[in-house]
Amino acid sequence: MQWQDQGVVLSTRKYKDNLLIMKVITENNGIYSGLIRVKKLEGGHGVNLAGNNLHIKWRARLSEHLGFFDTEMNKSRANEIMKDPIILFGVNTLCSHLNLYPEREPCTKLFKDLDRLISETNDLFLWLIFFVRYELTFLEMMGYGLDLKECVVTGDHDELAWVSPKSGRAVSINAGKKWESKLLVLPKFLTNNDQNKITKKDIINGLSLTGYFLEKKIYSDINKNLPHTRKKLIDFLNK
Image (tube, rainbow, N blue to C red):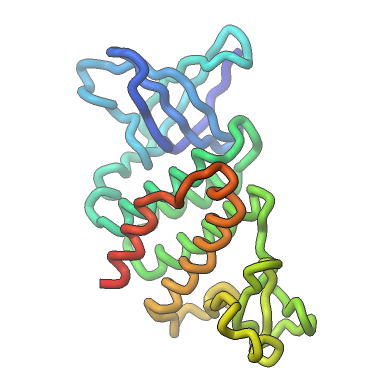
């Protein structure tokens, strides 16, 4: 059994002195774990660092086996990621999310959006908007998508301001006035494409929204907390 694909490194961990277990998200084969031999001439993990885009060959005797990876660099991005703490914490957070996604299941959109997110880091504000949207996509792919297109009470599509923590559906300004303290803020950048008037508070509200449902629907079910890197990202934004 074998395949070739492009993929992004999510994580590596030591298996033996000369072997690592690496997890990657690929364009056409989903998320895969496999063994990778440590090459002494390359030093450390070589090209197999989180965030790097690699050409990957996977082979195993049987499809259910862990198998071995052979890798070549497509796009080196690990060094750029480490230059900015927000980007570093953000990428590590998304890698932690993806480590929970079922292996070998189709996830082409998750791959393409992640690869784009890691590549486009020049505009930090825009990057954070894409980060929040990626977490929404991840929730959807895990079976917990939010409905932010219309008000759950009235069916209106305009003036959506909150999200119900129970249903994960949007609530309009008029319909939610009486329950404002019990609702989650819905930032405008998630309901329209106008990104000119977005503030840092909007970003934090977006992170609070996705964080609530990630914790409630995914992490609590496996008795885990949200990634500590996610908290560090928010702490940097609050400075």
